[in-house]
Length: 164
Image (tube, rainbow, N blue to C red):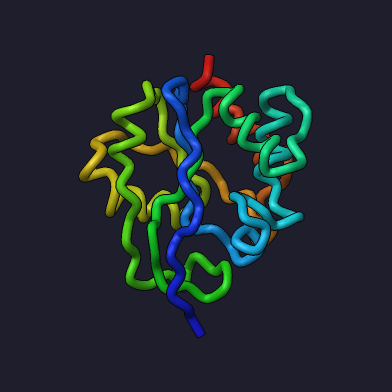
């Protein structure tokens, strides 16, 4: 059964953020761990660390520092929705986050979305407000096993390019 989830994490950004990466909604494991991409098999943090040639951040505090040091803002497209576990295809009644405060505070160059559903939700609900097209990236979720680690690294190289 789907459950109603309200996003509990604040966006991570500052006045030096140059790219914004948006997922859909934190998974149950992420909510349990109190931070983005918290499933132990999610490849998000490893891919970003490898692409940026930096050590893997292990703690939530280290991940926040990693984002700030690399001028990356992180949040999700949705403020709330009905969802069954971490299944993005089950999302119903989505309510988008207001991205305008981030856009007003940070000199963003590029917005990225992680996964097909995040890209579709951004295009439908956020693009009309931001007027900034998003670059879709593949999901780093363990459920997306069709995309190899090397393919993820290649795709996420776009983040490193946008930060140059």
